[in-house]
Length: 258
Image 1 (cartoon, rainbow, N blue to C red):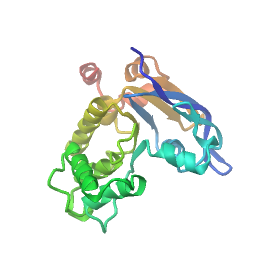
Image 2 (image 1 turned 120 degrees about the vertical axis):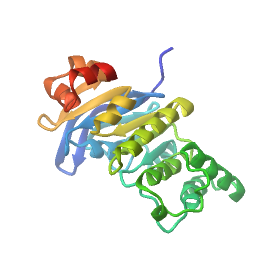
Image 3 (image 1 turned 90 degrees about the horizontal axis):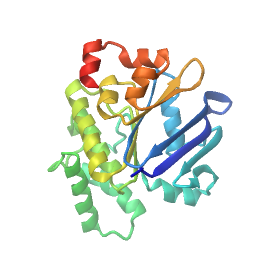
Image 4 (image 1 turned 90 degrees about the vertical axis):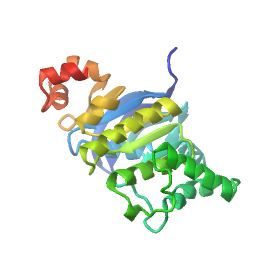
């Protein structure tokens, strides 16, 4: 049974003002897959993510979410669609003056005003348990390790039970063990919630662990030069892509991974 396509980018130009960073991007994302946006530093990965989550309109082209052209909608229609998105920012972006419980309750209170305080607390505690932070509700972000802060930010991203989760360099600043634990959590969420996960990263361990589909953005040509499964890109992708994916890995290691 084929999975539903939930997001389509059509002839998308990503950038700021007159600065075009990426041209003519075309890809689709299916329900329940982990979609990796990768490429070298400065290629426009995070800029593309800003367009996809509705923080900034693309310079040209369309972003279609479940049949709706996102940027042709008015502001209130876009706000309704955004409630289907959960975002884990690179630095976590938790409110430092709020406890973890308060951080997670905030989007529920904002977008679900009919939910009672007791229900909000129950939902927030459930989200914390999903990311392995049971018992941490009354802690502040400053009291957490880097890995715990990422998990707490993920719990907040899950607050509204989104259909799509967007991650911007989730492993940045984490030690290898914490990064690996976060990768495993991403896979668990994909399998248990059925959410589509769009992940911006250049970290090879994460790519090899979680990727279902991959998009490679090229600095030189300023467009995508590869789209497909990790196996396809490793074996049949352009030289630049295969070099990017094989850097620092021997043939024996690659065979073991794949």
